[in-house]
Length: 64
Image (tube, rainbow, N blue to C red; front, side, top):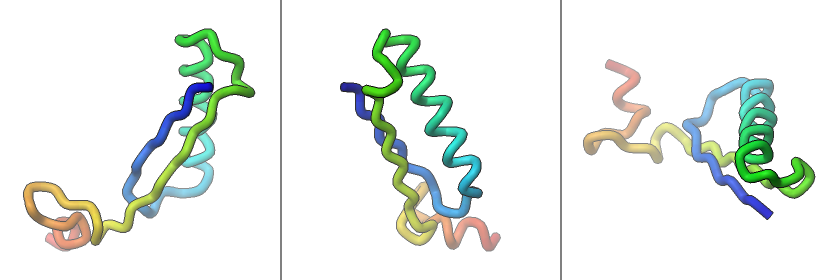
């Protein structure tokens, strides 16, 4: 049973998250030959204050 865990910055519309789940499920199913019913996709949204790039939280970078 394939399990895919995706980490994204918070703030995307729910419909986009659903689209990612659909598309990733389809791709994994096709590439691995696994039935879609066996594919698990976990999407974790991380607060911008908890995601750093180059030592700066994304919440601070977006203010500039």
